[in-house]
Image 1: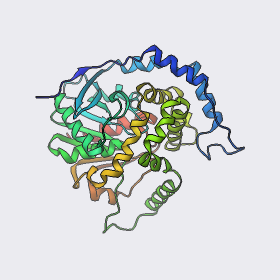
Image 2: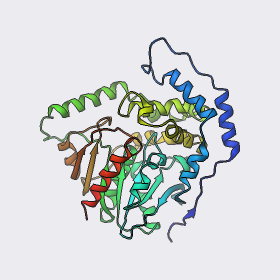
Image 3: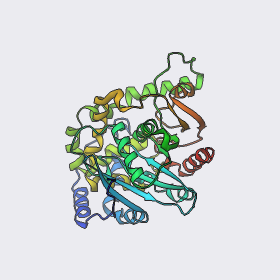
Image 4: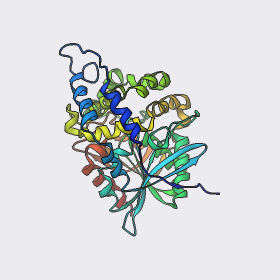
Length: 370
């Protein structure tokens, strides 16, 4: 028996939004030492202005209407709710494309890219288990490879036998696992984030590659503390994130600034889009459950990753502000790379920050596979 798919519509109760505004009104912010800026984390002056706009000017109903322009489905797989935005193309020969987000993102990342993508693709954008409209996880074990297996079931239930897969952040690991699990169903794999170990026979890095690796090392020293917390004590962190929208916003927005192309986060993303994403976590009460994916990955280890070299055609989009920019020779040892583009701008949240470049590159890669 196949999966039972139910139509879903985004409808957040007024009471939830009223409660959010009340909490924002009663927010208590910590002090900040003089002249530190973003040096210790989210800058207080920036956050104060963002919270004021969130409370007095932001309109969740706007993005709710934008989301509801598309079809949505929900189903249950292995005891866990799965939600997916399903945007069908009018093109008769459109390629189905599974589009997978990561943390601290959501399906909101793709909204500015969707109108152009649906010119040539049927888009299936799931909310990862524990994220957004898939709801919180209640049982352990939802690591990237298990998620990939569930998404294979979802694509089959939607009637797609051959499809492309695209991912960034956790979505890249999930997408790579889909390609590894069912290569006969995957026409191509496109990644805008990739992490691989150095092969034993790798040549010395070029000067540019050495610079990228040095930047990655610095990020691991100074920017990866959130991984330690979310990978070891997500529940403890969750009490703060789940109870304070300001705390949740500060935790997430700092990453959008740190992983984008430039120091001014509002030059990379609008205040509305930043708040669309944060508010989605808030209204679905998935701040805590989303972080559990780090805990799951630590415990699953290699079992959560592709078990062999991924042989389906693979495209890599290398954005300049991405936190992981790996040498091509290293990536080619693990993936059948047929497309590699060093992008001129953009960072970790490419579909949201530079939707024009994202759409063009994804479209060019899959068009080249015909």
